[in-house]
Each structure stands twice: as structure tokens, then as C-alpha cells.
Image 1: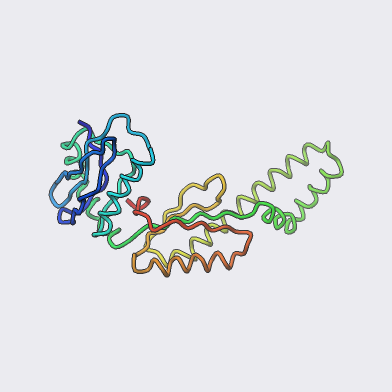
Image 2: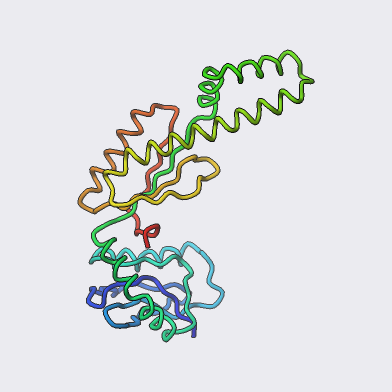
Length: 237
């Protein structure tokens, strides 16, 4: 039967999983697959698994219980091996890598930060600071049929928006990075030009959150900072 994998821990990690249920309906019983120095917390994989609320919560509950007692490598929802033997073989093959990652994330949590800027505010700044954009903007207003100028204006504004967002994102990450162990920049979302995760030591979580709020305050009301965490360190596994 396929094996569903929740997390990897060191072999001596406490496994206080009483009362915690696995994915599936009925809920799968949790167990461990062991290799030298490592354990994987697993269960039978239910057929036709989907990312339903109940199963997502069960997946995260297992990981949070493990993380409460020490370092664990949380696997993403839906990771399935062919069987327990394949999972054990993967632990053996990647023992050094998993051990290194466990050492790295031990005592740490992940915070994800997304940043957006009001589009009208950004465009006002761009127009105010670019003589060429002002010139093209005036020409297209005076002559609605000036298609070449309209295309040139759109391309110039688009490049400037991207450049400014890139610079701001780089600056925000650089200012917050000293409060974290590591950073992992992901692709922007539809509404956010910056999508970045920080690996933060548990005892420094309060200081990191304060640093984010201070940065948001300095950026002003045109920016929206959305901080989520603490989370299992998915982005650093």
C-alpha cells in the first residue's frame, strides 16, 4: 500500500502522537519508518487524496506536534511513497542531507512575508520622476490616435514598475535578513510584488515580528505588509 509521509526527524525525536490523526476518512493510523539515525512519520495513503480542509489540518497537526518537541523536516501535503520500504530507502540514500537540514532548522520556524504597494501611488511617483513618461503621457492625451506613443508609454511604465518593485523588494529583504537565519524568495503573487520566507530562531520570533512592523511603518500607508507565521519551515527543507 502507498505510504503517506508527514515529516522526517532524528531517530531519538519524541513521538507524542497520541490523539493525533492522520489524513483520510476514516483517519489513517500514524506510524514510523526508521533508518539509521532517522525516522519518518507516516501512515497509509488514502486513495484519491485531495487537499480538503480536514486532511490539510490533519497533515499540519502532525507536523506541529513534532515541531513542538524539536527539529523536524515537514513534508509538503500529498507526498506519497510506493511503500514503507521505498521511504526507508530514501532515508538511507539522503541521510547526510536530511541530517544537515535537521541541524539547520532545529529551533527555527518560518515566517512568510508578502508586500504590496498601492498601484496608483506607484504610478504617480513614476510619472512625477520621469520626463520621458510625462512627455509620452501628454502626447497620448492630446492625440488619442498616437498608437506608437501609447505603446511606447505602456512599455516604459511597465519596465519602470518592475524595476522599482525589484529594488524595493531587494531592499526590504536586505533590511530584514539580519533578524533571520536564512531567506528564501519565491515568485511574486498576483497582488504582491514581494513573496519571501525567513527562517527565524524561535527565541527571536518576537524581535523579527517587531522588525517587520517597523519596516512597514517606515514604508508608509501605500504599502501593505502581510506576515504569516510561525509556520513549519517548508521553504528551507
